[in-house]
Image 1 (cartoon, rainbow, N blue to C red):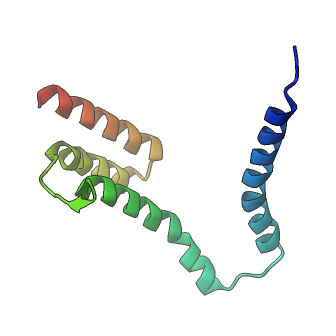
Image 2 (spheres, one colour; image 1 turned 90 degrees about the horizontal axis):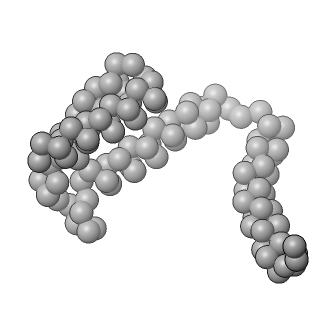
Length: 108
């Protein structure tokens, strides 16, 4: 089997470019004492990112606000949100969302 060096270099370069932004902040921040207010702020970042992603998917269609364009997404989000709120289980939330969409698409 012939090794294609340009493909190997591309894979190595992509690995390095992916590795550096993940490891470098971890190395720098592990040596620093982060203030309590900053840690409290950082704890809210994943929730804010997830809310932005879910909100965009539920409320936008082709870049415009359309709440009632696809009601199946909103109807599936209701039990999914309740399971997430009550159980705090990622697996339970994902499974509920999948089955909600499955049932709604079978009905509509």
